[in-house]
Amino acid sequence: MFFRKLGTNPRPGTQATLIVTKGPFRYTRNPMYLGLITMLIGTSILLGTFSPLSIIPIVFLILHTQFVLLEEKWMEEWFGEPYLEYKKKTPRWI
Image 1: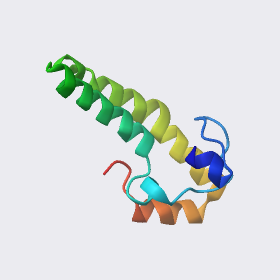
Image 2: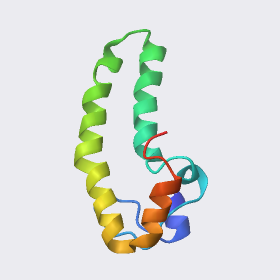
Image 3: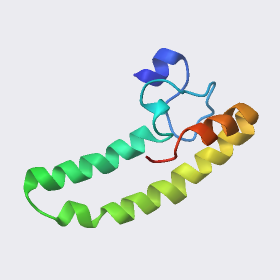
Image 4: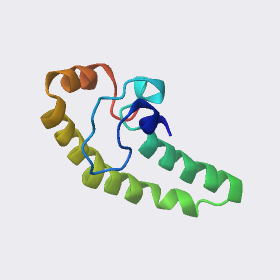
C-alpha cells in the first residue's frame, strides 16, 4: 500500500509520521474517501439504479464530520506549518 511504502500508517485514527503529498494526494487531501464516494457512483451506474446514489449524502456527511475534520485537526497538531501549507495548496475534496 502507498502509505506503508512511504513509511506511515494508513489506518484512520493513528498518528501519521509524515505528510503524504505524492500520488493522488497532490490533487486532493482525501483521495481514499473520495474513492469510496466514486465507488458508490460506479455501483449505481453498474446496477442501473439510483438507490446507491441516495446514500451518498449520508456517507459524505459521516466521512466529513467523523473523519476528515478530526483528521485535519490532528494533522495540524502533529505537523503544524508544513501541513497548513499543504492545506493551502491542495483542496479537501476536488
